[in-house]
Image 1 (cartoon, one colour):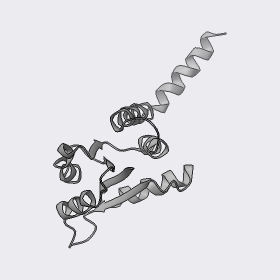
Image 2: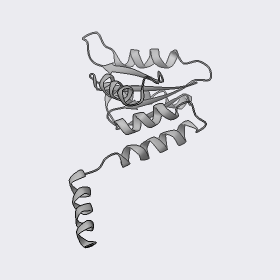
Image 3: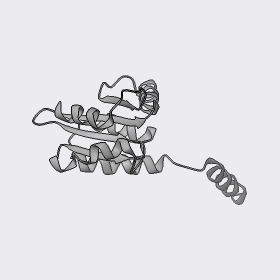
Length: 141
């Protein structure tokens, strides 16, 4: 079984999952790790617990907030197991893609590549696009 975990500093993970659920309903496929929200929180112990709870055929896709950050790095050490995949720079389009396709036929690597492309396509400078569109319409007359 493939699992998706949004793991971020603070409550960003909780918020982005809530927004995803507002848009597409509760898929039940995305878990959340809100790191460092209490004094007792231990990132490495939490990552270890989550990885150790994976079943024999399970894969975990960790969608983290920041490359090189402590949250992502805590999971990087488990990548050699072949059960953990870490992708950083999570945004809403990426998370929707991961949630919608996690149970599909794509390999984890292909799913992540698709999700990264979707994430990139979701980042636009609206002023520029709308300005170019308006200029193109003016040129048509």
